[in-house]
Amino acid sequence: MHVRRFTLLVILLLAGTACGRDPVDARTSDGLDVRYDHVLDIHCGVWGTTFDGSDWDADPIIDDGSKPRPEWRAEDEQDGDANDAIAGAIRLVSKDVAVFESRGGLVARFTRRPAPWPDDDVCE
Image 1 (spheres, one colour):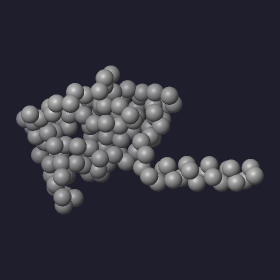
Image 2 (cartoon, one colour):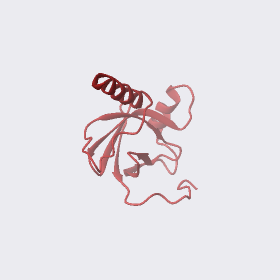
Image 3 (cartoon, helix red, strand yellow):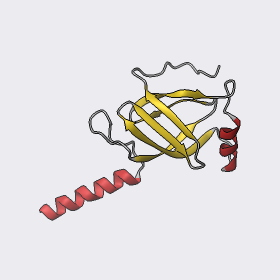
Image 4 (tube, one colour):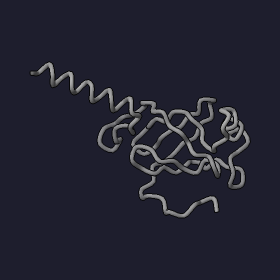
């Protein structure tokens, strides 16, 4: 009986990991320095992202006059789809600071936003 429960627990934990769920909420456990796969939207540059159940502001904003900087655009184009998104990993360095690193080594720092973003688009 205990073996079945343990096996079920392991299967559920592995299934959750395989599905790419968001990390454990850093506000209730530390989860620090754990890297999570993340796709960063760079349509207007790096202004913010959503991660760990929160919205995050880029600190500093990384843009080139409301478009991605050339090095960010170049990395986006390298994957062949130029979809205004870059794959990489994000990690919490404190409960309110996260760092994204692209597969090509570009880095962006984010601070947790105390309230959700407004629905309007910052690009326009």
